[in-house]
Image (cartoon, rainbow, N blue to C red; front, side, top):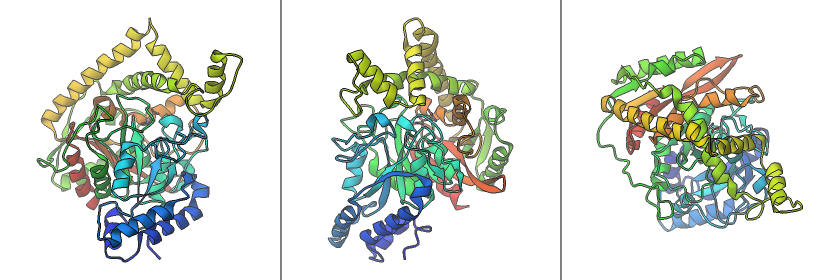
Length: 470
Ligand code: GLN
C-alpha cells in the first residue's frame, strides 16, 4: 500500500527512482482513491482511460535510467487546457463533446517530462467564478466539508490535490482562480508573473490577465511544476524567460492594512492573518505598513476588464466552428440558439457586461477608465516594491461557503478582493495554507497570499518554504 496522504512530488520522485514502487502502481493507487472518493467530490469530470499506458511508458524510461522531476508523477489538468485527442469542455455544455486537436504548450512540456495525466478537473464554466458552482456538470465539494464549495474556478484541481486524488494539478488564474480554491482546500496555489507560462492551448478568458500555474501540497512541489512548464514560447508572444534561482533574500514584508481591515473580512480570517504575521516576525521578517491608495478599486477594475476581454474571447463559440450547434432558421438564430442554450447564466451575464463596457458610448466611461486606473495601480505597486520585498494579504476574506449559500453574483465577486490585483498588475502570487478557522464545528482551511515584484517568482518559493516549515 502506498501512503498517498504523506506523499509529495519530491518524495514520490525519490521512491520511483529507488524502485520502492513503480509508476504503474502509483497511478493505480490514485485510480483506486479516485474510485473511492470522486463520486462524492465531483472533482474529476473525467478520468482518462489510458492512465496505466502512460505510467507504463514512464516506467520504461525509469528502467532506462532516465530521471526527470515529473517522470511518472500523476497530475490532474483543469478542463480548460488542451490535451490532444482528449475531451476538453471548460465545464460548459457548449463544448460538451469537444476533442482537443493539439497539445497546449504546458502539456507538451509535461509530456516531455514524463508526467502522467489522470484526468480533467472540474471548474467554473470558462473559469468564471469562485466556487465551481458555475460548472455545467455540478459543483465540486470541498474535501474538508462536503457541504461546502471547493472554491474556484480551479475548484476541481484544488479538491483533487487536497483529497489525494493526484500529486499535483494545473489550474488557471485570471483573478484568483488558483489561489482562492487552494486556500479553501488547504493546499498551495501559485500564480506566476504574467507571461512566465505560455497560454497556448489554454482557453482564453481575460487575455491580459490569464496565467497557468500549479496547485500542490507543498511549495517545493509547486516550484518543480513551474520549472517544468515555464519558458519562452513562440506560440504565445506574451511569454518571458525568468530564472527561479533567487537573486537576493526577502527581508521586509509590506501589509496594506487599509484593505485588510476593510469591512467584510471575516474576523476569524483576520485573526489567523495576524497570527501568520507574528510567525513571520519570529522567522526574522520585518513587517511594514504600506499604502496602496487605489487598491480598493481593484475589484471594480477587474470586473470591467475581465468581462470585456471574455466577451471578445468567447465570440469564437458560435456553434459553427466548435462544439454545440443548435440550428435556427437563419445564421443569426443559429448563434442565438447555440449561445443561449450552450452558455450558462454567469457566462451570459459576463458576455453582456463585457459587450456593454466595450460598446461605443460606454467604452470611454468604463473600459478605458478601467485601463487608466490599472496603470495607476501598477505604478503604486512598483513604488511599494521599492520599500518592501513582498506584499502580504489573506488569500480570501472568508473561508469556503456552503454550496448554494451565496446566490447573488456580487457576493461571490467579493471573494476576489485580495487576489485580482496580482492579475491586474501582472505580479506573481502564492497562496499558502495558514491554518484553519472553526465554522459551525468544522475546521476550514484558510491561506495567506504573498505577492512579489514582476519576475521575482523565486522569492515566493523562498519565503513560502520557510513559512510552511514552521
Ligand atoms: N473569481 C474570479 C472570477 O470569477 C476569478 C476567476 C479566474 O481567476 N479565472 O472572475
